[in-house]
Length: 257
Image (cartoon, rainbow, N blue to C red):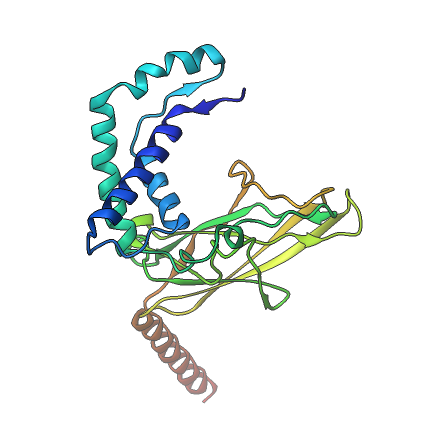
């Protein structure tokens, strides 16, 4: 048996039971109970619940006391109800698709598997995170496909994630395993009130025997912070620069006389 968080079993059962109860009661704020929304709710609860790990059959036996802890179950139920409400009001665009369409497809052919790319968009004046920025990832001038529809390109920054963004590019076929290739990526960033910004970075990749289907956040590339400058500041800088050039030109003409 591998390391397992017993809370996953308890939370999954409780979340599913609550969804069924809310549906039965005809609660009007429940807008969706698809598998993707349920999984989002389960993740919401697990991120707010202390884990209980086991690594053996004996550990599973001791876990019986966890499932008998009525206070713990009540606490999980309260968090789960909050999660169901939040997920119902902020459904992700792909929530209604079948789960199979939201998973990385298995491919046993040699592939260049990319790490995740993470970065942050900051205000050039305050160095505070910028929310609402649109980030587009390109390769060879073309928009990069993501591994599945749960990853967006372009993506967007939010206040809750403090200006951070993440991409996981779809693998590219290789002739054989062990090939080395350097990929040159381009990032375009734009946000209301800011000048558009561009970022470039190279990633050397050695092809693997198979397509990677499981996310490994330990394998990640941190892109240097992307700094955006307010449009009026940029325009003022251009005006100042223009005025300085005019003054220098006038000075040079007077010196020639």
